[in-house]
Image (tube, rainbow, N blue to C red; front, side):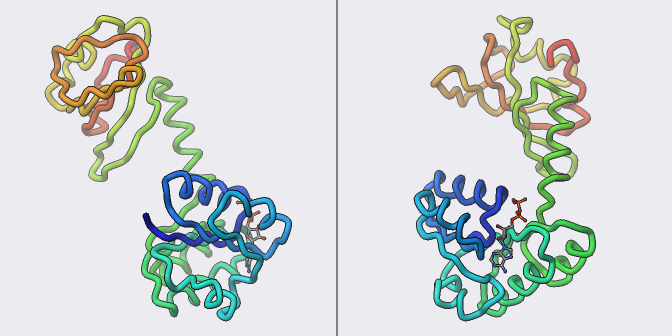
Length: 217
Ligand code: ADP
């Protein structure tokens, strides 16, 4: 169990906080807006009203003890940067920051934070990917052009083997696992017979994954 702090409990910060709680972590949420803090109070380990650009406030809340901090202050460029500087001076190494503009991104990358997030742009790319490949339920970039994707088997692929589904791409794609209803099947070979609604997780280069016949996706 890790200890997180989320600064800024707007839509982005709050949904990240709630998911971190759901994953079993401790989460301290801070926002200068009393109404938002009151709304989050029951969902987080601690929700506090405070100005995250004030060092005293951060110290009183023991933010220095957190493993990771997410700075989810929206439009306030100055507040976001001041807060990051304070967190760095407190020795926090894992700092993730939501950026809202290119200048904001440039300053954050010069400060050296762990990750700069552009929620709208990143979500836009994901939505486009899903539009393009509607059966791709989830995907995770691994770098070097490789991805892990989860595809949900449609009726037209019922009783098809993985070998048949992947076609000529079969030699370049690794089937990782299958989820069939409540069951996880971890040893998957290419003769495995798929059923409608199976979730099939595959790993491979994007070029190979694109080789799967479009009528199957
Ligand atoms: P979203 O798009 O995620 O809703 P917002 O810009 O509305 O983004 O949310 C940012 C949150 O950060 C707001 O709730 C705001 O009150 C909070 N915030 C802004 N500046 C500070 C600050 N200095 N200290 C604490 N919270 C702040």
